[in-house]
Image 1 (tube, rainbow, N blue to C red):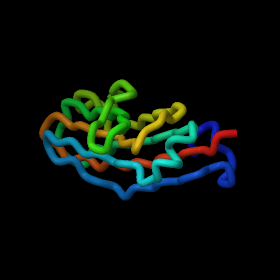
Image 2: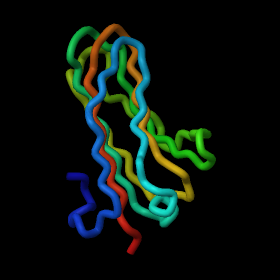
Image 3: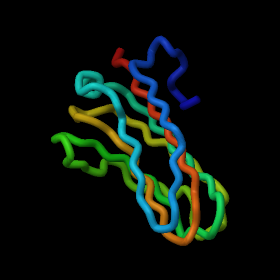
Length: 130
């Protein structure tokens, strides 16, 4: 469980994504399915992304958080976090936290560089403002 969120009753939205797989040099995105009203209410969010190496050797697997203010115009709001680096680590996890700004949607991007296959899972929480 993400730190700071202790009760299901406090969560406005609990978004669970199925796993996706990165193959070689590829980028995937996990996008929130919340309504605009949910995101505009200064919700506190926590977004977790995990990468597990399946085969091959990654140069790196990096995650970053973005939001969209106007439909398909995405802006990176959290700096990249390295999940797997130079094939030395079999798995890695990143957690992005903050307070939502007036945005249409949020998404986590995951970039892989190298010749490998990696399973990526992601989960996001938005907590109602007090």
